[in-house]
Length: 304
Image 1: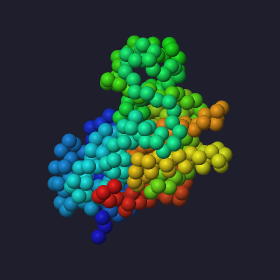
Image 2: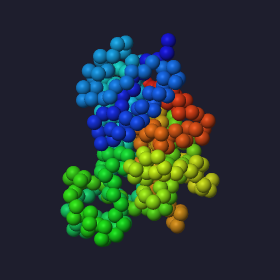
Image 3: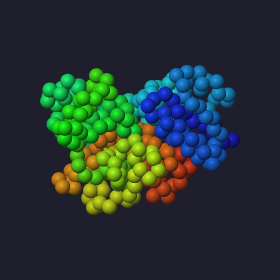
Image 4: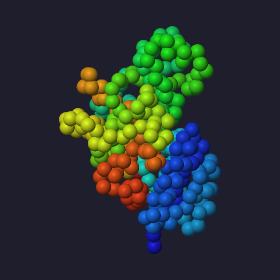
């Protein structure tokens, strides 16, 4: 008898629309592969939603993105309920979602990072922070939600004049000019590097990621072999540093003028939408979308 898979998606984070798209694609893929699938649009009563499924699912495919679904909360719930699940466990998920904590781990493992600080609006206004150009990032959101690039003092003043949208603080990160690279890591092994071309967009923002035609994915990236090896090695180190499982994706900037590589973050629940990057990396390795989703189900476990 085929495995019974509960796909949890949707949820209530800022990334709900992305999760709905990822979940819908994964549900189709799993049914294509012959799995029995129960769909769950996750609510705050997720434990009750899962307990109501009869028979109990063999595996939960976690297609949630953003807070609660990606930061260790759901992972802990599934471990308490004794249901095997996909992607990374509690520790890796919680650290990866907290950008400052993840940076600390990367630096501990000698993975190159851009300069970064935790700042408030007042610290930026008083000059007690990094000077432009820099990037502002909410500490615990994904999909580029809330990210702003500040290139000049004038842009900084305009930003400070607007309503502050980031709570009490935000991660301020040195802006590294150059090229955007990303690497999926499957079971600890780096896949092929993808270069992301964003056209008229200043960076790989929400629209670039999820609107058809918003970006172009070049795979394999047109880079020298030694640079390819360095970026893949950094991606694998980041995966190990956080204790990731299943498939994760590490994002990088490369400044060719100074031959400088810097990791931006690692995503423990990378998108699986029609415009997402992991499916591209899988296809390059000869795996269909359905193949890679099925692999994640077969890799699932209860203590990750």
